[in-house]
Amino acid sequence: MCWEPPGPMPERELAPYAADPERSRGRRHREPPPRGRSEYQRDRDRIIHSTAFRRLEYKTQVFINHEGDLFRTRLTHSLEVAQIARSVARSLRLDEDLTEAIALAHDLGHTPFGHTGQDALNACMRPYGGFEHNLQSLRVVDVLEQRYAAYDGLNLTFESREGILKHCSPRNARALGDVGERFIKKRRPSLEAQLANLADEIAYNNHDVDDGLRSGLLSLEQLADVRIVSRHMKAVLRAYPKVAGRRLVHETVRRMIGTLVIDLVRASADNIRGYAPASVEAVRLAPPLIAFSPRIREESLELKRFLHDNLYRHYRVVRMSTKARRIVTELFAAFLSDIRLLPPEFQARARVDAPRAIADYIAGMTDRYAMLEHRRLFSIEET
Ligand code: MG
View 1 (cartoon, rainbow, N blue to C red):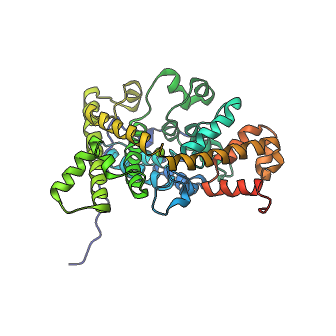
View 2: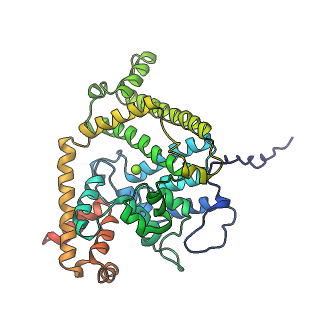
View 3: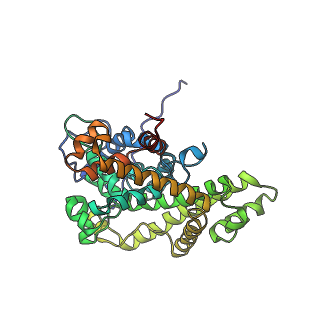
């Protein structure tokens, strides 16, 4: 009998509370509908082909890019977020493509040097409206990407843009129009957006444990005080008493991710069943439905606090952060004192709004490009 290719996979039915690409609120600039893919697949594809997405490879998560080849970068972080978000989306019959698009785009507006870079740029921008990486991610997809002849930005659907904008001040919300509305009316975004947000938390908590141990900044002994870690580590050692080193770490971390993902699916499914939203509009009026159970929420917060106190404030991280802050602050001051130091395309924009054009330029830099630009401006030898 000759081999027959399998027929098309049966379409998984979206739940009534899922964001349906056929019923999207649409794009800022009208476009013909996509062929052979959904509106949200098109968003996801546009994000992957963007310049800002490729730059994530050389932007810091916690460790500066040149500190080691095996640490997470914003790119690998974003891929891990997308993987976790898609798994949960499939279990809950949400739209996987929208969840993935939001996960892949959520950090596009991040500055070089992680949170230090963001804080430093925000301090520089304080007199000029501030800088917020979340808002900047939206600015990247709405304005800064230059890929299409007919418009600026990627022209994503309302639902992707809504998901990218996780939080926002009332003042900014008023200026943003449609995607800002929910912050004024105190509404929730789609479940796909709520999910991408929690997948982000699962990803960074777990990979920061892994990277923290890999770098030697954290020890297994320290982590034994953190409930979610010790519980899983003990279970690994019960099953494999001789396992140690990297294998023990990886076995522990993968089980932690598993626990968090399964708990998120269960607790969210319970919430959804209880509230029974009949549509995305009902989701927007409901309380947050994608959530951990209270116990896992508490354990996840404990891990978060541990990482905050022991990894992000480790003296070696603080030393690097201090250098990063100096680089961002000095670059900003130099460009603001003389916009002729900017590359020509940013000079043109700086003549309209210098601080914002400078913030866009700096935010778009990778870690190593920011260091190079700093040497070019402040070292006599470099040109
Ligand atoms: Mg993130």
